[in-house]
Structure formats: structure tokens, C-alpha cells
Image (cartoon, rainbow, N blue to C red):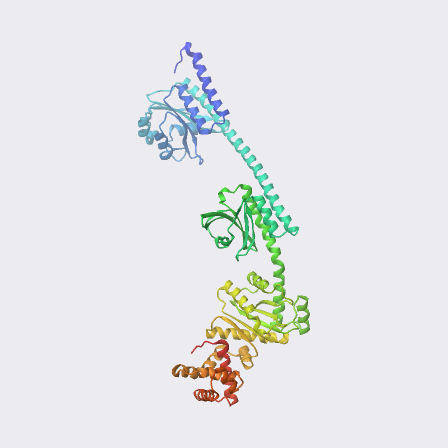
Amino acid sequence: MRVRPDRLAEYLQGWLQALADIGAAVNRGTSLRELLDQIARSTCQLMSCDFCAVTIPDDSSHVLVIEGSFGLSPDYIRYVNDSHPIRLDGVHEPTPTAQAFTLGIPVQVSDIGSDPTLAPYQAAAKEAGLTSMISVPLNSADAVLGTLNCYSRSLRHFTKEEESLLIMVADQAAVAVTTSRLRSVEAQRIASLNNLEEQYELQKQAESAQERLTALILNGGGMHEIGEALTEILNRPVAVCETNGIVLYSSRRSGTALPTSILTAAAPTPSAPGGRSGLLNGVRLPVPEGTLQVVCAPVMIRGETVAWLWTSGPISELRPLERQTLERAVSPLALELFRTRAVPEYAWQTSGQLLAEILTGKGRSRSGLLTRAADSGHDLTCPQALLCVDIAPDREQEQFPYWLSAAFTEIAAHLSPMPILGIHNGYIAGLWPLQEKKTADLRNVVERLRQAADDETSAVRYAAIVGPLADVTESAEAFATARGALRLAGFRGSPSRTLLLIDQGLLKLLLQNANISALSQYADQVLKPLRAHDVSHHTLLLPTISALIHHDLDVEAAAAVCRLEKSIFEQNVQLAENVLDLKASRIADLMKMSLAIEVQDIFGGSIS
């Protein structure tokens, strides 16, 4: 490419302008792709070429790809980059571009169609109109950055002068690429520093919020004060609900409150996928107006979720500070819940240890038990009733049963002296001061405990009350009696209820020590003839014998209860004795009938 002397100044002006355009692109902070396109465009104009490409190594540095171009069709660029990238190693005959990059020298091809190293590209090059080419390296101070390729439609041989000019452009392009990359790295560092500064400020604000909440706890503030502060910080309604459904706090903000009645049921399980962001969970609540999006975070103690912190959502609308505040707020909330639970848990452990000593009959002397009980607010000198509720025997006894503690507190919080309650050998057991009450008066109390246990385990059917106990030393036998009664009720399939065991006599001893199934079978065997006769002859012999025994063989009193004439009642008694082949006048027979009737009266049911 020769330049006429009268056009030399104009030609040089064009070169200077092209180089200035490249420099201006760098100074503008143009992206690398745009800069490479600018280099390709300027080179085409300066070298009077039809096409130009700038190639650089990919991330693996095993191939060259076209990153900037001018004049080349998108199809040809895709063909090279996607289907036949320019390999730098592992090939027997490297392409001219690969040679220029590897050797750091210009390489040109006058006829692309006849060069064997370009065989994979010849069809695509012909379609794109590429005939001749030259490739020069982009040399920087310490490495080759890529290549600058020029193409012409017609056969062309690039002179030494043109090679020198192209090398000069390539050198300037290498400087521009290096500068652009340095500016990009610098911009990333600045952005990173700015981001770090923002993150630092965010952390400071979140820490300040957490410190404020923690200070409230340390200064004696309760859940209400913490909730108010959190509502103010988030500027959103807030709710804290225990996993058992108890709402510890709920606030309004801008006239809006969260629907606490359905929050607990909507709480996600630990493995629920849902919309999660760190500790936060996005939940959609069904409400009459449609769907309400809320956010919750688990409040955990010893790895167990004990409550949920809720606020309005969705998660995507939470600002970074709000996210961090929510995630950090669960720690002060856990501390507050731990504090409020520590006292009842300690009291539960203390009463449980005392109860275990009483019911096992081991450990302290009677006076020692009375003293320890008095120190804990219990009075064992007055008559007691023993309460017993059957729960799953494999439940972890050492774990603090919050559900039972809550039910017990609700029932007995204002009583003095305080009852003793705990879990012993798979049963809820307790000693309840009777004072002016009768043992039967505690049936409602025990039913509430039985229902609380059934709500927790879904497997509780029976409870028992034994009493009155005149002395604390009777407690171990009373527990054994109650435990035997609950087992017998379960064995006989009795309806769910609370059993009242008062002065059981011989039955009490059998419940403590006998084989329960044998006792049940014995009672059924004794009374089976009466049941069969009553069914087949439409008589009431079983109620007749039961009334006679309950009235201590007083025929007149028993007949009055059955609303029968004395003579007719006596006939029924005689018939029943004949059916049973037993006589109430004989002590041994009377004991058989009395024991069987007592089992029938208390437990009902039958395995016959």
C-alpha cells in the first residue's frame, strides 16, 4: 500500500486520528468488547482491508476466540468460536493465527483456500468472502495478549512496510487492552471497597439494633419491650409465636397487624424448601382477601426451634438492613425465651428429683423429705392425693416438657402450698395437697393434665387418682397402685377416662404386685356366668350382686337402690349365687365376688 507524496500528510492525520480514537475509548472506560471492536474498525480503515478480527485466549488459555471484529458476519464468528476455536496446543499444523500468537511474529496467507492449515475454515471463509489474511501478535511488555487479523476479499500480499504499520497498530492496541484491563481491575477494586464500606455501615447498623435488643433483656425488659423495639426498627408489624401456638407478642404498624391465629400452623419445617434467604423463610398465608406474603425466622434454643419471629413480606422487598436485623434479632429473642424458661426448668428439675425420692422410697428420711419439700414451697404434712397420667413410656424423662409445665402452671400457679408434679417411669405423677378438698374433687384437674398430655402425644387414654394419703410414706405404694390400675384399664380396653381409686383394699395390693392380665382374666372368669345369664334371660343379676356387695350385704339398702321389693331382691340374689355357684355368706366366695365386682366397677370393659 503506497501513499502519494501529496497525500502523506492526510494519511498520517488518519493514523493519528485512529490511534486517538482507540485512546479515547480507553479513557471513556469502554468495555473490553467495545474497545476491541474499535481497534478492528480503525485497523480496517488504516490498512484498507475488508475485514478485521481481534482474538484473545479463553479462560483456559488453550484456544483463541474472536472477541472484537469489523466486517465479519455473526455466522462466521459463531462458526469459529463455537465449532472450530483456534487451538494453541494439541494440533499437528497450527493455524497462522496460532503461529502468530505462539511465536510472536506476523504470519500471512495470500490464499486461504489453498493453505492446508486452514482446511477446517476454508468453506466458511469462502462463504464469508475471505481470501487473504495476515495475523500479527498483540505484544505487551511480558506476554502476548492476542492477535490482530486483517482479511481482504481479493488476493493480496502484505508488504514489509504494511507489516510494520500493522505491528505498530497492534502494539498500540496491546497498550490499550492492557490499560483497559488495568482500569477494569481498578474499577472492580473501587467497587469492592465501596461495597465493603456499605457492608461495614450495614453491619454497624445491624449490630446497633442487636445491641439495643440485647440491652433491653439485660436491663430486665420483657418480650413486649423487645417486640416494640423491633417493630420500630423494621417499621413493620411483628409477631413472636411459640411452636405450641402461644402468641408471645404481636404489634401493629401503619394500621396493619399479622394474622397470629394462622401463623403457627403456617410455620415451615426445617427442611421445607420454600422461599429461603439464609435464616429467613418466605411464607404465603391464605387469607380471606387472597394470599398474604410474610417472612419468618426460627428462634432456637439448643438446636431446637422454640418460636418463630414473623414480619410482613415478601423477602424480596426486605432491604439489606431489615434482613440483617431479622436474622440478628433471633439471638436476643432466644436469650429472652431461655431466661423465662430457665426458672421453671430449674423448678421442674428440683420437683422431679424430690418426686423421684418420694415415689421410690429411697434417699432421704421422712423428715428430710418434709424439710426439702418445705424449702421448695411444698407441704407434705397435710393429706395428699396421688395423680398419675399414662404417657408414652419411652419419652425422654430428662428433657424439659414445656407443654406440661405450661399446663401445670395454668392449673396450679395460684395454689399454696404448691403441688408436686413430674415425669416418673413414663408417667406424669404428682402429689396434690387436699386440705379441705376430697380426693374426687381433683377429677377435673387430672382430666386437664390428661388432655394436655393427649394433645402432645396423641396416645394418652387413662389417668388415675389415688387417695387420700395420710402420710408421704404411702406415696410409693399409691404410685404402684395407680400404675397397675392404668395398665389394667389399657389391658381391658376401657373407655378413656380418669380412674378414682379410694380405699381399694385387697384390689390395691393386687394392682401393685399381681400379673395384670391374670387379674383381668380372673375377674372376667368369675362374672362371666352372670353376664351370660343376663344377656340370655334379660335379667339384672350382675347389678344385683354389685349392689349387695357395695352395701355390705345389707339387703334392704341394696334392694332400695335397685328399686325392688326385698323379697324379689332376695330371689335375684339367690339366683345369682346359683349361677355363680358361690355364696355371699361364705367368706372365701364373698372375697371372689367382691374383687371381681370392684374390677368391673372401676375399669369396665371385658376381654371375654
